[in-house]
Amino acid sequence: METLFEKFQQRLDWVETRFVRSVMGEINWNGRLIGIKGARGVGKTTLLLQYIKLRLSDQLDATLYVSLDNIWFSHHQLSDLVDDFVKKGGKFLFLDEVHRYPDWSQELKNIYDDYPGLQVVFTGSSLLQILNARADLSRRATVYAMQGLSFREYLNMNKGTDLQTFTLDQILHDHSRIARQISPVIKPLQHFSNYLKTGYYPFYNELPQLYFTRLEEVVNMVLDIELPQLRGLETAYIPKIRQLLQIIAESAPFIPNISKLSQRIGINRSTLLSYLFYLNEAHLIRSLYRDASGITRLQKPDKLYLDNTNMIYALSPHSINTGNLRETFFANQLKVHHNVEYAKEGDFTIDSIHTFEIGGKNKSARQLPPDHNAWIAADDIEYGHDHKIPLWLFGFLY
Image 1 (cartoon, rainbow, N blue to C red):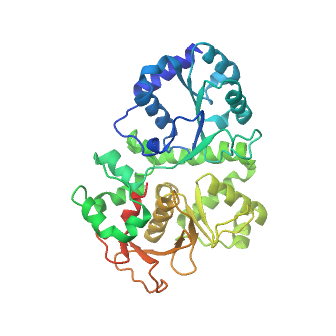
Image 2: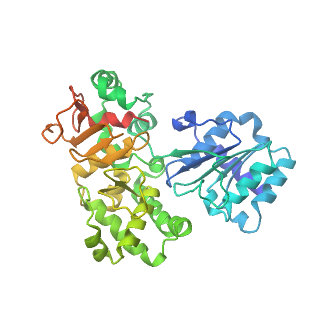
Image 3: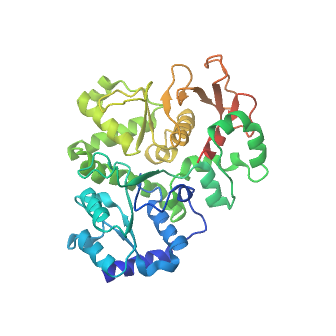
């Protein structure tokens, strides 16, 4: 265990706290069992270490962070570590990458039941299933979802600003005032294209020249390890799934013909629909449906996007479609707090109430229904007017 404590201290020394994700303030850290799930690379590990450094600096002797993909666990049991840790006065245990540990859900249930004085915070893949896991943790764990940087967080992290969030209702009905409030602080259009290309994953600042290489590694880790391990994806199909991601990346956006797509990549219809469902769960793609309530694994999506705009640049750098970028950004930022559906008129329906058309600065309302809940999210404008809102402003929702 001494080795794990030493590695923990080393990682804690290196973590910076100059910028902290907003999700830290949204988590109730008083719970006995807290889960944080999200896609690879969005900053879950950094969040844990920052919390420890900022909130538990006076209790480090009673605190331990470990990653369960550490080779130490190939010869040791988590239960033995926890028992030893608690006997030595441990109170706060942070477990990273829990899905890499066999029977993780049963272990967490036992830890929760057997050590009532121990607080456990764990992170895992966006594919992590709490309710349907072998040991049902839904009554024990409070689970939070984490995704990549919003446009607002990107500006705060990289430009030293302290910009606040706004609700969708505030943006819809007060966007002119909000834009006038932000623009004197920073010119959003000056930085928006950089965000779309390299702003979603916080690790960009570590080695900018290797950003897309690392992003491809993130995709490969999900395909090669997480999906086979957590969803039973057959490894023989992985090259075909990569081909599918390439097709979606190059489309503007992709409205799937499942029969033709099935023939093109050589996967039968039901298997293809299952894999599309899993790719959406893994935050590699974003599937849209006309009615998002009660979606089943074999339901055909009406529209497909990659999960975020940075993936488009990583997977299809020579076929960038501006319309695809804009719509991907909008769907990605809205999905955090809202229900995003495929629209009968326009591009998106939000919360079954608002209809949105996405476009450039000259976009008109011709394709929108004539009612007060129809809006245009327009790129390349700093300020909006009436029902025409700057697209970048939807990056301030979280």
